[in-house]
Every structure is written in structure tokens, then in C-alpha cells.
Image (cartoon, rainbow, N blue to C red; front, top):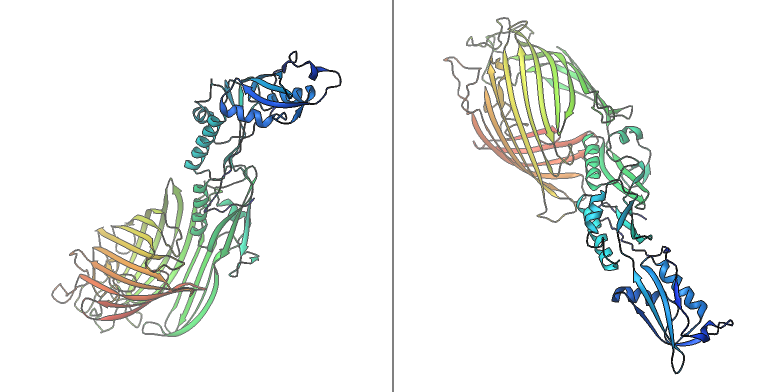
Length: 607
């Protein structure tokens, strides 16, 4: 028997076929012809049942072989008595006969079983107290199929309300001495299997290790199947970022259930090479490699090397996720980097004494540990950044053309050592391409006053996103209404390059990066309406963004101690998201509230 996870049916059975223990009693004296040694068959002119209610009377009449208008005999009547007792409904039974003009009339006199106790079998999750309550109207009363049916319905309702979609009451029967036997089949899992399918829906060989997948699951052999745990398992599998689709198929029956996870894998490995020219690096070539599923166990590696005429840059990250199978070991991520580019931390009007735009270089690394705490994911880490401000020749440049400081130290080189802690609660159905749910995060990053600059500051940030499926256009896949709100502030020292910058691809679209200015505090709000484009691997988006520095002052100022920054801005527009082997590619066209427009490109959703 196979079940659908969406519509799981249940089956209620009632069986009354257990042999009773009370001996038959007969009254043959009134029908001597039936008691003769040759046991002659005699026509039955009437059959009655006395001693029980109408429902048990009907059951008794359907049980016996002796029927009005048919022949019967002493042997057959004795068999009828045994048949009545074997139903388990009657504590005693006997028959009587009376001659009529054409044959005999037969009367079966029976007494119903009085139900005095309940015995529950094969239950893991159903409490005895619930069974007692479900059959409370039957206990101490003559057995009643109607009351038993009501008790079965009560138990099925309890299973459904508690998420045990496969569980069912398999059998209820009287077993003598007033004992009612309640047998249940709760959907105990016999096996958990993993099946990989390709884009055509055919079974294929997966790159992900089967055991690694099973270690992420709450449903395990020997446990009772629940829809809530099934949903949690699918959410956990999506959170791994390894699968495009994840579904559950069920096979077997309610006593022995096989749970099959059908998974379609993402493209998790890629190599890219390119080149170009930039003002900061000159001619350059870039090679990158990424693998989000090393060894088939969800470990990830990202490598990027850029070699240019003036510089060598790299970025390397290796991570191992937290695993439910080893709850005492946190996940971790290790990163090392070196990069240098024209700084986005300063406005386009900021120039060095020699007229160059400031180049911002960062060299460092860090390690971060992650582990869940109840319904939250916690992370802690330590990071080191050596931040330098230079001109195009590579010379350190601590001030701009007006003498305003571009670094905390007077050398143009700062050491930024920070301890970071964060909490997040992710309830999205899919972290890569969510269609429902929320994600909420808080973080605090505290610097240690060591090295060049002796910077002492704390950055506080909060981030919330909500995703709601809607169906205005009635397509196969739902549209998504998505909202995001971010806010942050800095306490203590504020290096100019650490100001919150507003405007750009990941901020207020329609403005260039940092064009709205930057300050000690900010708030940013965005809304998107995402519309799947039929069977194409693409999604259309309309969006609106708003950002404000909350009146905080940019640390990069002009000749008189202040430059003009808008500080508040609004953008709107439309874009396209394309599913590709390297992830979701993003292209947006934004218009701002000053009548200007920009194209923005990126990887992954804006939020």
C-alpha cells in the first residue's frame, strides 16, 4: 500500500471474531423430532433472538445458519450456538424450539458481554489514558458495536490531531471475561531510504553520501511517522543547500512503513576563469573553484585567485556544517583573504593629496563556529583584518586631499581584530530560493584595541525577512511577496572604512554603491514581488528599496568638515532571476528618487 504525504488515508476496522469461553446451553425437550438419533432436517418457520438490543439482534441473526424458511437440525443449532459465542459479543447463548403446523419455530436466547477492561496492543505513542477516555461510554456496559465505533472514531481523531497521519485503529474485539482488545497500527518506520533523481525524474546516482543525508533526518527506523517531522526533515535538507527538490514517498503499510526521500541535487561544483582590466589592478586574470559538497558530506570549499599587473589577490574559505548526528561538535568555517580595490567606503568626491582615488586593501582571515541552541542557530568567531589605504602606486595614504583621516592610525594602516557573536532563526522552506517562512538575525561585533590604531568599537546589526506565497496569476509555482528590514549602529570608534554605506546592488538599488552616503547608523527596507516565468528556469521581480543613515554623519568629510550626502533615498524597478549551474543570477534595473537609473548585477537573491 502506498500513501501520498499530502493526502494520507486511514482505515478503520472492526472485527468481532474471537471465540468466547461460555459453554452453550440448549433446550431440546420441546422438539423431540430434532433430537432423534438420525438428526432429521426440519423446516424452520420462524427464527427469533431475545435478550439483547436491536443491533446485537441483527448481528446474531446474520451469524446463525438457521434461517426462516430453511431446514435446520440439532447439529446445526448446536453449531449456531458456537457461532454466536465465537463472535465475542455474547456471554451465554441457548436455543429453544416449538412445533408449528409446518415445522418448528426457533428462539435463540443470548446475554451480551459486559465490557469491564481494555487491553491496548502495539502502541508506541497512543497513551492508555486516551484509550480509556475514548471508550468511557462502553466500560461497565453491555457490549455495543455502536459505542465501539464511536471509540474508534475518537482514537482516529486523536491520531490526526497529533500529526500521526499513517496511524490507524486496526482491530477491536472482545476476547472473553469482559476484556476488549484494542489493536493499533501506528505507522512505525521499517526503513529510511534515499533515492536520487535527475531533471527528467529518473533514478540516478547521487554525489551526496546516503548516510550523511540520513544523519540529518528526524524520521528514523523504529519511530512512528509524523507529518510534522517529515516537514522538518524536508526543511533541513533544503537548508543544506545541496538539493533543488526534496520530496517524501511512502511505501508499505501502517504496520511496516518505508520512508523514501527523493532528492534532486543542485550543481555544487564549478570552475570559472576570466580576465579584464580595472583601474586598481590593471590587466588581470582570475581563476575560481567552488565545491559545496566535498566528499558528499556537505563540506564546502571556495577558492579565488586573481593575478594582475599590480597585485595578487586571493580568497579561500573552507567550511564544515553542524551535523545533527554529532550534536556536541560545532560546525566551523575558516577563511583567509587578500584583496585591494578602489574603495567603496568613500564617496566619489574623496581624493588623495596626489589626486588618486583611495585604494582599500585588506589582508587577514578568521574562523567561525556554529551550533544550534533550541530553535536558534548561534555563531561565534574571531577575525583579523589589516586594513590599508593606498594610492595607485601602492604608497600608504592616511589622509585625503583636505587632511581628513582615512584611517584610525596616522600611518594609513589599521589592525582590526574583532570577536563576533550572532543568533539567527531560519524558518524558510528553502534558504536558496525561499517561497515561505521567515529569517531573523542579530549580531554583535566587538573589536579589541590591539595593534595599529587600537580600535575599540562595537557594531550591532539586526535583519528580518518574510516570504509569503501568493497566487495572483494562478501558475503551477506560487509567486512570492518578500520583505526585508535591516538596521545597525556602531558604538565607540568608527574607522571611516567601517561606516554603513547606503546605495548599490545590495542596498538601495537605483543608486551607486555608497552614493547615499554612510554613517554610524542605518536602516534599510526592501520589498520584492517574485513571479515565476512559466516553465522557464527564471523569475521576474519588481522591487522597491528605502534607506536612511538616521542622521548620522559620514566620517569622510570635505574641506570644511562636511560634505553633502543625501542620507535618505528611495529606489524602485524590475529585474530577472535565472537559475544557473553556478546559482541564481540576478539582474536589476533600478530608478531612484532623483530620476537617475542604474543596472545592478549579482549572484543570489537580494535577500
